[in-house]
Length: 167
Image (tube, rainbow, N blue to C red; front, side, top):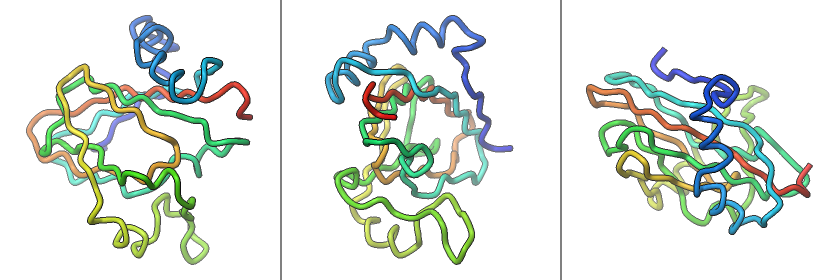
């Protein structure tokens, strides 16, 4: 597979557990959604080089619905993220808009309809940065990523937090 994922790395690694609980990103998330936050889940995504693996545009909230949308994912760039190695692409402001269906013609696709993507494609911003950079992303933000066309893997540690009053 061209996208390798490790679910719950904090359960097997003190380094990932320390980042999950003590990194400055936890404070940033608390500034955005309030001081009483809980850890929802974590994963490591490693996009392998030279593969055509693309993550189609979607919103995370539809995968993890709660009583309110105070959910933030902190994406820690373990490797440098460049235009060539499959950066996260986001559509600013879409976290304030509607939630789009990931079902089409009775089939779950995990992606928004082509028409939704076409409506927003001209507003896409590519998120790049040095290793150690962090991108904070609201769970309703429309996003996807392009294939890794470089010769090196691109790894992210993704930690998602939610407000204590979200159930």
